[in-house]
Each structure stands twice: as structure tokens, then as C-alpha cells.
Amino acid sequence: MSLTQKDFDEIEQVVEKVVNKKTSNLPTKDEFFGSMDKLVTEIKASREEQTILSHRVSDHEDRIEKIENKLQIPSN
Image 1 (cartoon, rainbow, N blue to C red):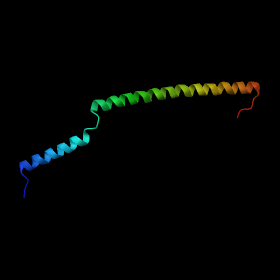
Image 2: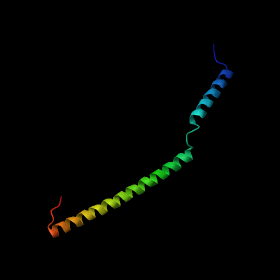
Image 3: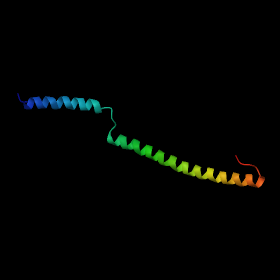
Image 4: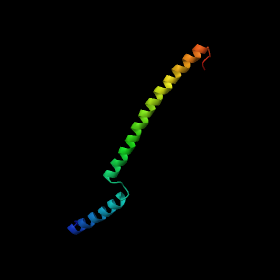
């Protein structure tokens, strides 16, 4: 028994319905890339801030160490 064109058309319709139902909640390409752009921007800003704060902490540690040495305070 071979499949007819009508059978193929019906299979195609069923598959199309299932695929549409499964993908209906997924974001569009533009929505996805828009969200990714926002996320990447926030990650970049966070990393830049972390670099700045790390430099400040290092600077503060150096200054505290100098003060401790000057006042002869033992460091922990």
C-alpha cells in the first residue's frame, strides 16, 4: 500500500499544527536578539564596574598597608 498525495497533504497539515503549537511560545528572532543585546550590555557594564572596583580595592589595600607600617600597626 502506497501513500497518496492526499495522505502526504494530511501528514503535512498535522506536522504543521504540531510544530506551530510547540513553537508558539518561543520568542521571535528580533525579540530574542533584543533580549540578548540587553543581557550582553548589562554583563559588559558589570565587568567594567568590577574592574574599576577591583582597582579601587587594590589602591585602598596599598594605602592601608602604608598607614599600618607608618603607625607600626600589625596587619592581619
